[in-house]
Length: 325
Image: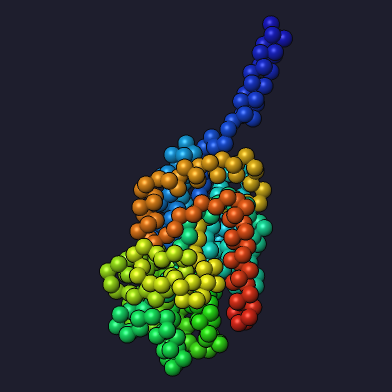
């Protein structure tokens, strides 16, 4: 009897071990790190797709805002996570192209992450108030050459600062860091408000941050960085203005895990995202924000991010913009 009981116990244990080993990913909720605060472009995008992702994956996607250090704090949380797919990151242009290009010291590199996709592109829009009297990029550049022009951003070393500087350089301003006054604000919302109340002359930021202001006539868009004209923004494209290099200047949202993310998990994410980006509610939110939905494969996402990083890094090097520490 004892031998029989022992054999049954061993069989039961082996069965339990086999069942655990065969448990398919995901068998519990997935922690999704949003490395920026509530209400920002990353947060809006993440929460817009959360419901569709949950349905596609068949398990809850738990959204967590882990903020700090311009997206670095949340990124490090994923960098140090296991590669089992239960801690994933909504990566953003700021955290994964601007930060690496601008900051001399950063606790991670692009190689510390495995991207499963980039799915959303936020064109950059440069805008002014109607009261400024500026109606075109030619007008703005003329004003800059006269002097006394300022621009706002969400902080030193942010995409907004890099965007304004890159636009000015492409339009022939020899040293944009001296030709204009940079007035950083505490966040993208405050940066847009600074233009609205006349504190600064212009802003170059993601379309999602300006869509509402443009729609109600509070801001006048001067250019967009998409290859095609953008719905809701009556402004020429950078290519139409003879500056196609500015098409590289876009915001984006993607999903990444740590570098150790396994192949089977990455494959699952590709399948889920292909379904989630077709969700009508998600598409409606993104269209209202002026976003372009473009689902990239892991290879396409890596090439896109690397290319953007190289462009930004060269600009930073040419103008001596790198931030130490």
